[in-house]
Length: 314
Image (cartoon, one colour):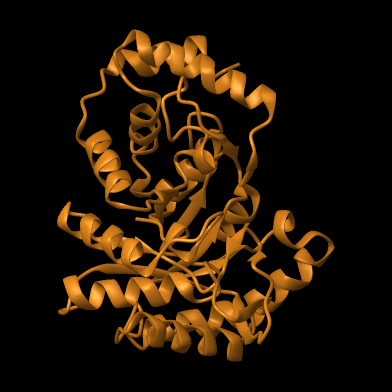
C-alpha cells in the first residue's frame, strides 16, 4: 500500500478514513506499506503510524520510507502545496547531507511510532526533479547521504537501502555505481510506460537489486475501467488526450479477454522477474477491496501478447 493518498494527495481525507484504509489493507493481507515525509509533510507517516499501532502492535509490517527532504516548521501553510491538501504544518526542503538523512530518519520513526523501518530510500534524485541542480544534489548524496544510509544499514537500524524515483535514468546511474538493495521506480513500468523494462529491470535482476514497481495505475488513468466517468490523471497531472487514447486502446483489448483495465494494469507490473513487490495507492475500504480483488483475479496469458501486438506499442 502506498500512502500518499492518506497524506491528502489531491483531496482531504479524514483521520477515520485513513485509519480504516490501513486496517482494511492489513486485514486483506497487505504487509508492505510505503510512505515518505513528503506525503502530506509528515501527515501520511503520522497516520500510518497511528493505524499500525492498533492493527500491528508487534511491528511486523514491512515499512518503507524515504530521506532526501527535511521538514521545516511552517506556521501558516497554504491549503494546497505540491498537490497535498491540508497537510501538516511543515515545508519540505531537499537535503541529502549526513545530518539531514539522520534527522529525517529519526523524525520518521517518531511519526511512525516504530523502533525501526525496514527499507530506507533516497527520494527524488535526478534531473526531472532537480533540473540544473541535479548534479550538485547527486554529489551531495554520493559524498554524504549514501554513506550515511550505508552506516544505518551496517548498524542494523534498517534492513535495506535504495532509491525511490520516477526517473529511470537516475536509477540506472546509481545501480551502475553503488551497492543498492532496492530500487523503487514509480510509473515507469506500466501498461502506458515500459521504459524501466528496457534496461533498468534487467540490470537490477543481474545485480541482485530488488525492484518495487510503484504507481502501476500511472496516477489514476489506469485505475478505473476506461468507460468510467471520472477525472483522469497521468503522472500527477490531467491526462493528455493522446494518453487517454492509448489507455482506451489498451482497455479495448483487455475487454476482449474479459479483463478490466485496472486489473491488467496491476498484473502487468508483477510480470517481470526483477519485480519483488508492487505498491499502489489506496484510500478507503472500497479502494482496498477493489485492489485486492484485482490482485486475486485470473488474467489469461494470451492478453499480454495481444496487448504487445495491438496497443502497447502505439
